[in-house]
Length: 330
Image 1 (cartoon, rainbow, N blue to C red):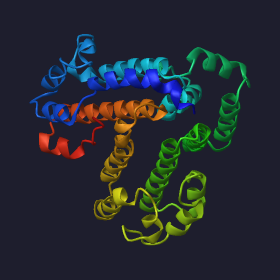
Image 2: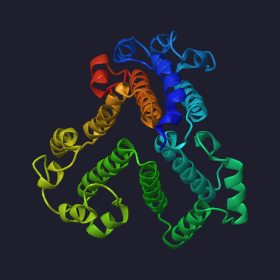
Image 3: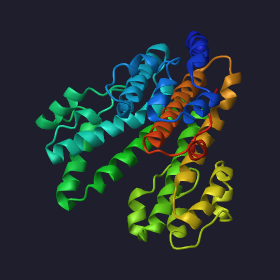
Image 4: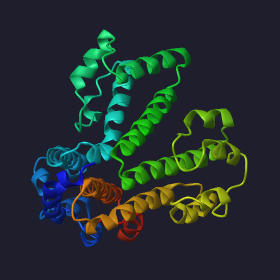
């Protein structure tokens, strides 16, 4: 990618970075006594404009969704290339495809679940689905999924097909960019995903044939390694994982999973890895990495807010919340 094309966008994003919430903001919000107080503490942030739009504090998801949609719209307008934004936003395109297919199968209107982010024309896809359109590869993929579903009547087929297609597109985007940071992001996200899949498959006592359907190719660890590990005892000392860039982030989570059988620590460490991956971008003067880092930072900000607000809704204490929070970019 031509780095010089990102001079103006990088300068603008450096200014907008000041609007991102810092770790002390999250601590302050988490220490509020109630969900309503937590929302009130956002009054001096970019989220304030949405707070008056909701009729109850329990509708906080409206606030998060509207701000995320607004942010992505601006990010696409600012960036001279869609790739640095698409790398993070692509998951919403595939989320929408999942909703579209489940809408078709259930014959229910699920419009409230769609995400209005990126290039997804809901009316075009709904219309194309009715008419059996094959105008692009996604319509062909939808057709394959519906055929497979009709044959087996297994809803998991939808996720398997679309998750594999998502990661292939993600890796293709990263490699097209020729930016090392983006390639590392895609490959390490595949590694995290495959390891999480392996742990879940072991817990559910799935067989190798099941694992072969859902292990994603393209990561740093070959697919066969996961098949071999399915029926073996694995821990933080397993050699296959020690060679991975993400090892120091997963080793404690492995032991925690073995002890408690949960993946909450694994998910937190995965998010922390990706924040660490972009922290050095703060020292990059200009380039596509600046766009990507800001988008990923916003995603983590929304995730942290959701953790706090869900916890407040459920009456959980501040110390518990702080343990669940992810690191911040700024």
